[in-house]
Image (tube, rainbow, N blue to C red; front, side, top):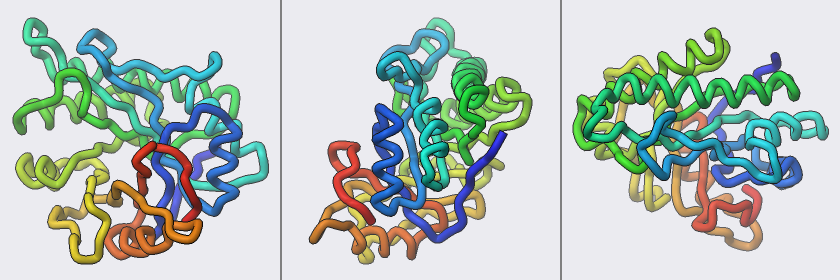
Length: 240
């Protein structure tokens, strides 16, 4: 199965991709990478994440199909995950269950398309988010285990966090690639989060000027290697 990764510094587009056409259009606008949202977590029920479906297909299916349309891009896949209810209270198990679920969806799509994302990223902003370091770290560790077992080691797990979480929970000590949120996108607002495991920064919200957001992209490229930018509507508002 083909794997498409990026080399930086680059900034891709973070957003909601509901069709193959949406992915292809973004790539044709010049975005070198796609950070797709494939799962949400409106409740704390198992499997602690819910696969987004559009017209009967998953987002990984649409992204994989886009590669067959003559475009090239790197790809990170994001899944929002909830922690467990207070009666369950097993954060490691919840993370593993969610990871296995996400991996299963991605691997099923890849059986049809032949492509895998560079990273499968956990976003811990679900129905029950972690409120302390122990919950955050054990949910992430469970996610990593689930991604590995659910894909027989073919996928690589990563995490998404804001700068407060990154610093307060010492996420630089986790042996897990990380993507750190930064807002506003400005050269006068450089990231304060550090760590050798930071793979890139996710900036929001992007601003289009004269049909592009080159100014924001330039700023993000000065911060990290494999970055993403999000517009306020999570759409494809303009090219880089």
